[in-house]
Image 1 (cartoon, rainbow, N blue to C red):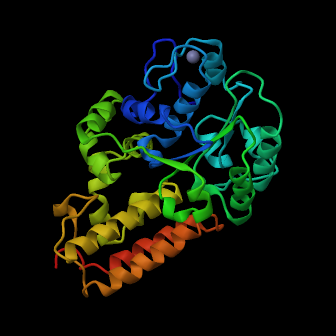
Image 2: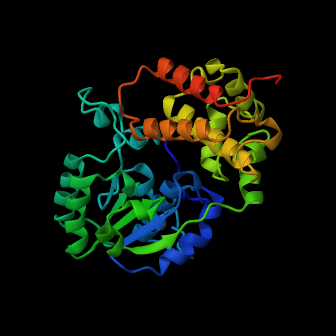
Length: 338
Ligand SMILES: [Zn+2]
């Protein structure tokens, strides 16, 4: 599903983007790094900001007019001075590229990294002249999707920016970027919405018990909406600790692997927090079972989950892997009824 931008009614794609848009309007550097989680709407923010910078109508507090010719071209995805640089899998997920494009006609699996060919094509594109009056813009999301060679290629462009070209980058964790990339960008914080605003927005998207799903997703509303869209409601989420305790991997049947790992990491975090006498963050406290032999087996389980999370592109036999990970977590816990 393609995310919308600002249309003729002037409404923002996500209601909480307003203050950061107003703050960004004053930024005049050639590269802006927006620090914010994807689940807080980082991509929608970058695209709306790009629309505002290219808008040829009246821009108030960073908000594009939504009606001029430039706004209509951005909406249609055909503005000649705007280029999006995203990993293939993300472009596909957000409806910003066709399956044909991201798989190069079926020759490639849509990946989670930004590929070097795309970076080179973008650098060639920025070297040509702008078509309309506002200069050119590259939206790059997320900067963590750059690896060594792609980050270095980009670094050159940031060091010697051609006149009239601006870069808009997002990242959740600036510490994971090359210091040289970080230091060449101005920085802007995109915070997630306040709790009440996030709950109200989710309720407007027909999510029941939005509070529990926001807890499950560290307060990030787009992640909570994705969990809801995947069929996980508050009850199913709260039942996961008991399923783990019973070693019942079937509770995660049909989940994509990245979501299973994410849920198990959160569960492990909360089990460790509870064992240390701290408040859990993602699950209801009453749903969490006790560890069996202290925290050492939980720490080993945590290390294993993190190792698997780092190798998400590995061609796992997913069902066997989930069975093994759930089994291992289960053995770290006191069995039910004891
Ligand atoms: Zn406009």
